[in-house]
Amino acid sequence: MRRLIPYLLALLGGLLLPLAFAPFGWSWLAPVCLFLLFASWLNATPLQALARGYLFGMAQFGVGISWVYNSMHDYGGASALEAGGLTALFVLILSCYPGLAGWLAVRLFGGRGKHIKLLVAFPASWVIFEWLRGWFIADFPWLQVGSSQVETPLGQGLAPLFGVHGVSLTVALLAGLGLSVLDRSDWKRRGAMMSIGIIIVSCAWLARIQWTQPAGPPFKAALLQGNIPQNQKWQPEFQLATLELYAGMTRSHWDARLVVWPETAIPAYYHQVKDTWLADFRKEAAPHNTDLIIGIPWYDMTIGHYYNAMVSVTENPGKYFKRHLVPFGEYLPFRHVFGWVLNILEIPLSDFTRGEEGQEPIQAAGYPIAASICYEDVFGHEARDALPQAGYLVNVTNDSWFGNSMAPHQHVQMARMRALESGRYLLRATNTGITAVISPRGQIITQAPMFQQAVIVAEITPMSGSTPYIRFGDWLVIGGLVALLVFFKVKSEKISEMD
Image 1 (cartoon, rainbow, N blue to C red):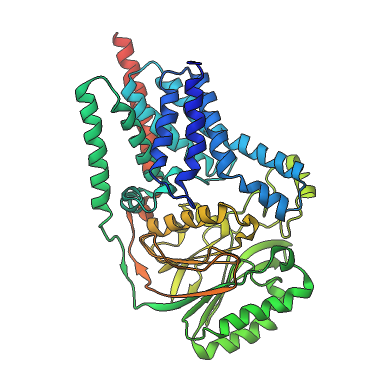
Image 2: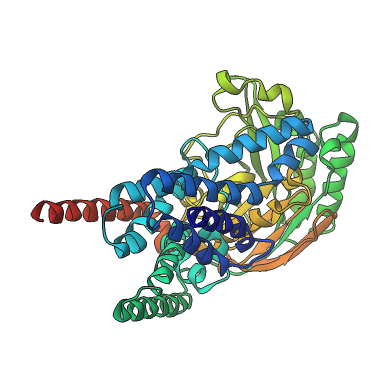
């Protein structure tokens, strides 16, 4: 039974961690869960740390992304067995990252001092593998522990400085310090407690700093939520009704300087409507001085490529092609291996082409914008390409695939982190929710109820300037952690040679 305790600690930590995120919002649980994981790693061999980290990951993702099953079964056309199998496979892949984090930390520093592991090896390895999960193989940064802290002093103070990974590192460091508080040595225990207090007070002080400033007067923006059922959206007989729905919602808000429609709001390719319906609507909008941003699929007939696009209907129209596509939803990774998945999932427009880097920013309401489509707002580095030139952020999304699950709440929480990192307002228009206007502090100013047709209106102020995170990105944290691990590894080996 005593041998099982470390595994039970890891399992409990993984099961509880999703509660730190939206919609539950128990952010204080994040360091507690890593506390339990690190405790399970403390006296482990590398293989034991791998197994315990893997168990932690299975619980974390098995609960936290259980909505993947609903997306595949309820909206993707997969049977219960197929959806369950694919979801389980995805969870098993994601669980490798916390498992490998434990293996690496113990492999490098297993024979070293307890506090080196708690305050250097475990936090650094955890954050490096969270970062790797966001781009290497899985391409899925969901449930990064830093995102759970968007409303706490940790997120408010550190996100503009170091981004979500800097916040994750601080959460992991607090977990390590928490274990150090249990040390038998009085001075180490007092030092750990003092360090925890210093971190919290410092973050609260940093949260008071205003990194960006107004670039011009505020303007009114209206965000549309059409609530079009997913099984109806692409049916040809509903196309005209969908267009008229969004047109009518827009006409009711000609007093807004900007109106934003959701992702693929127009259920037709751009070339099919640009010279007809869209051209007529552009003429109708012009006298009101109202700019439109609309999500629409785009087909390039010259090269035969499909894009998930956002277009601006303004005096100087522009377009943005989505660069970071959803695996298995918008493109098929390793098609020669996973081609059979397309036969299971009945997802329309599931073969998009990735947009190029360095696209010219869309202009709307007199300012360039940092555009993102759906999944792109979960990546902290994506918005940096258009900043600091962009006055505000715009994200268009169709979260109807998530249904009434945890996913829409988790998704908007990550979007809030993007606003906080950049020090800019974020306008987020979705098909079914959560449509929201988010402040540069990551606070939701107003939001629409889910699964209802709605329009939300708010005044936003375009911002200028750069946060430190916009200047330096993730490399400040990730590069620093790699250098720290190398330094302590080399130093510990030299000490061993002297002994």
